[in-house]
Length: 287
Image 1 (cartoon, rainbow, N blue to C red):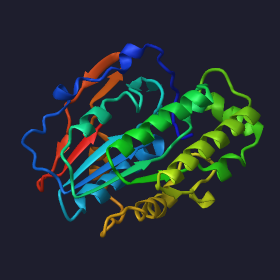
Image 2 (cartoon, rainbow, N blue to C red):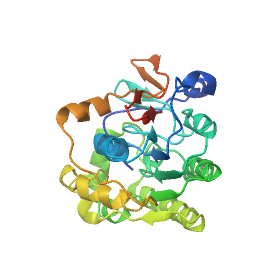
Image 3 (tube, rainbow, N blue to C red):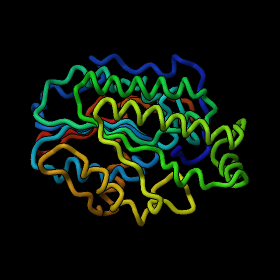
């Protein structure tokens, strides 16, 4: 259930409408890449994003399209907010329409991780699962091999009810789902997602308990390289990338790469994608 900061959920469906695909991209002159990567997640992806961008694009032996949908507190179901920043839902952010328009590539791979925010927001289990299922099905339609990283159940279920309530009130203002019910729901969401991923032939990775510290949902900084190297080692490429440390300037630039649509203090901003292009023809598309 990765997340960080104080946020709320917007109920207005209209706020989740992205630009039409024809207006989302400025990539007409870019060469067709040799490799396409899709990463869908929330806080854990955001915290590791500079490492992933460096591994996926900068070190790649060929031009790469990197598509991402992530962010602190990111919801699969509805628009979400962390402090003053808002992002559309994963299912409604516009990434799927643009991906469907891309030409075939020689190599592709998709990663889905960070399930569970919608449960702690109070969304029903069936709604949360339906949106995750839609994401899985869209990836299948794109014919992209999938790696699914399960929620860190072993670490989450070690929480006491008292600690859960403290974390909930600190990070998730709003009604508190009883801890026993929350445990049942995250276990059930994991069961449904893992069962579907297994049936679909995806590679399934179970997080290690030692990836986490006091915070039971975010991979701790000291374990980030090891954890993400294990995750990307599941890629079907003949030369999977190696996650390495990056400098502060490179990290800051990665974190500042804007998505297609986001809002600050209630005002919406839009950035046609790709938001970054590279000398070899690689490109970064954020949603």
